[in-house]
Image 1 (cartoon, helix red, strand yellow):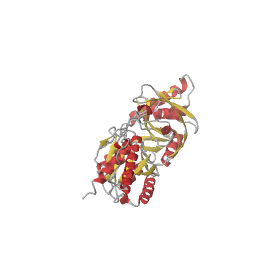
Image 2 (cartoon, rainbow, N blue to C red):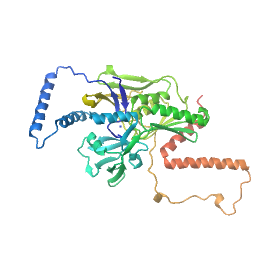
Image 3 (cartoon, rainbow, N blue to C red):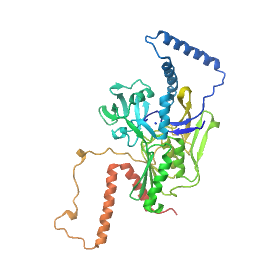
Image 4 (cartoon, helix red, strand yellow):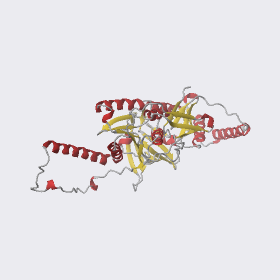
Length: 441
């Protein structure tokens, strides 16, 4: 069976997304401890029979076994788990970029559901959900004590239906409710736009379309700009990107690298590790790159950020990433179900594991909370031109005055971007500064 490796975050995706690979059936283990294992399986059978015959209410044997399987897997780490047929199919839909739900990536921490990141343009994003939010209740019922899959199932529902999520957020004194309308989620994996002379590549997720979206969008913007020589560089915005297909993370990294390792994976057996290297060719021919990350950047997005950072190909700006550096293998089981098992860690070109540590930016830049109208004091410094009867400037021609006004308009536009998205404006300022130094000699 063809393997598909995901470097996403399939902890739970509502419209939800884990480095994962699909592989063939599991082979039986052959070791000297078989006798002990069979004794434990006999114990499991005894308990199962007792529950079926003596529990206070009649139980569904299939559901009981599935719960036992899921309990065994989830006891290993937050990303291993059992996928019933419906969940397995939903995961396959997510890698194709189309699915129904809220558009939110979640994991579990201290018994509660934690938001890794909302996905751009989805109901959760539009409702104001933020990376780092804790979900404590769904429609008034606590999620404490539920497995991640059970909590995710509570949040699923028909497209167009309403869900009320209770959120605990750092900086807020009290929990608050967020109302979200479930919708059909169709992801645009990457969007490309220009800000002045800079190209901004916003990567939302790594699915089958990510590299093609980037390549096609970049070609279009470069053509509109009149060629590569007319841009000062590229910002790759990976903020709140929960990950996706490892193959796409490799292709995106390779697009901006000429040579060298991109990422390696190592499992229990060192002989079974994989190493992925860049091929010759840089689609922007060495133009400067700034990579934006934050706490919602996980897995595949961390692979890209670490590869460009370690090769000194890009300057990483923002805040520390999520720190998911493990690979899950999705193994098909009977009746279209599957199991997701952590089988390896991945390592950056420098040989460092990202697990639990994340990628630390070269320049740490926090995103300030947006100021409200109440924060504005309305004060503006007066200038000479505001004074009644001030002298005119007789040293400039009309063309020179017009040029000054155009330059001021550009500066004011940059200031507007800084108010709207401080981190992105900071990244663009870096590109502008690098270009002011001129080409390397």
